[in-house]
Amino acid sequence: MGQVIFSFLVLLIFLGTTPTIAQTKEAGNDSNTSEFFHQAKAHQVELTPGLNYFLWNLRYNTTNPVEMKLSGTSESIVGEYGLNSNFSLGGVLQFTSGEFSYDPSSAGDKRTISGLDDPKVFFLANLPLPAGALHYGATLGLSLEKSKTNDSSNTGNVATGGFLLTPFIGYDLSLGPVIFGGQISYDVYKGDRSSEITSSSGIVTNSTSTDGQALSVMTFGELPLKTSTLGLSLGYFTYAKTKSKSSSGTVTQNNDSVTKSAIKLYGAFPIGRVTLLPSLTYNVLSFDDAAVAASISSYTQLELTCGARITF
Image 1 (cartoon, rainbow, N blue to C red):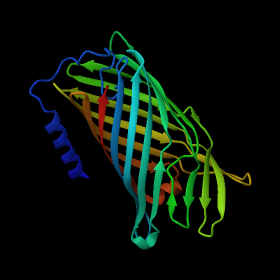
Image 2: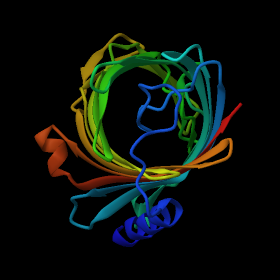
Image 3: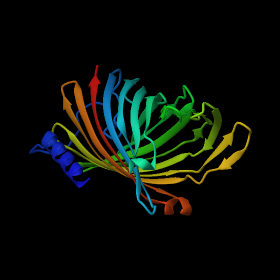
Image 4: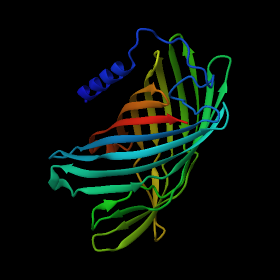
């Protein structure tokens, strides 16, 4: 892990090093100072294709240690249009494929997942203040199909089976050569999520899950260089317990609340109308229920992303 972070830092420094630190940003949305709160400028269209590699590791506390891994890639496209200097609208489409595996392999069967993630539409806004700027907006996740698992073929999709509305509010401020800021978000609406499980014998079971809202608090610092930006963000996320309802109407309270701490290194490197957007994220998760937590020795997530924002 340390070698990955070191190599990524070398890449960022190589791309962004310059002898002079820029004291002001390029003219545009005066309030849109940070890359963290980037927003399309008035009447501009932005398309951002991206490729993400992820590796999740879950280690169990057992007599014979067992590790479950999920690895794969996601290909995404983000589109955004600046309505004016303060408001923009956009959407996200993403296709994900991955594989669950176990070490030792005898601990479980391999399982593949693939498909279209829930499409998202979003609204962004900024409000210039005498010092810094206020940023706010919301993302709506749209459910197109049930969450599906097939035990006979060991396959599944990546849809959640439900709608999700998450607003946020944040603030950033330039202090000397560095930009600081933060944001808070909460799932104000998390609709019922429908799931379908097909057993190895072909029996189909439908169920519904509710609750599980997420609260996130993030803070960041950015260093604008002459032709690029380097950033570091820290995040704290909590995910509430969920409830499951079977097709017969039986409701079960799940002890699955989770806390996640995240650190992210990112950069923005303009080349004409294209801006390269590499990032590296490392998450550490813990289960809040004592019995569940006792059975898990560690749960980590590593994500490496590279995007290219194209302005028209």
